Length: 219
Image (cartoon, rainbow, N blue to C red):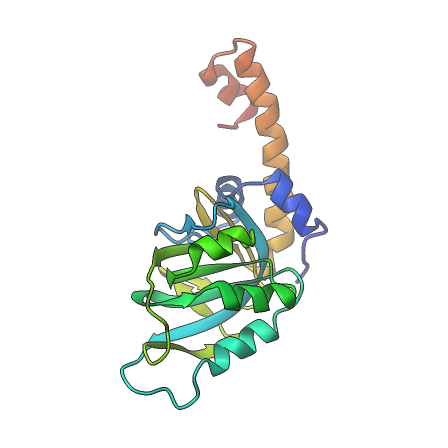
């Protein structure tokens, strides 16, 4: 199992979610992108990193250990990791906000992806912390939602996300790259981007799209 030779900054600068999805399709991994809206809520349109997974649940009783596992998750974050908050799209509360973002960043976290609601959006935008989420809610998570496990495989819209997997999120969507095909997927995506640059120039020079596809097999 090899990780890509490319750095996170190289991947972020050169790739985009759709081309990574195409590369995964070609490798037989055809269900790596959740078909749900995940908006760049803090105005930063791209996020790349290693998955630090948290599994959330709704609750309807007094929490005996408030915030325990979410605080543990942010304190244990490593450089280059992205918090994945798998909350089944619940809007019962805003499970991610400014203080968690501050603590996570201090630990090296580069952003958060929340299948659920967040709050403190303006403050997180001011601190330029990338957060992709499916909703907002001003309610505190206390006694409403909690983390029940971390560093375990989680699921967002039938896409399984393993701890440590590479995740790429932009305005088109989120794509998860399994560790077992990471090297091949990133290599193929880089090659496709280079090929797309060539075909784009051919089209700009006047070549018909049909002829470009026949010649290069890229569209």
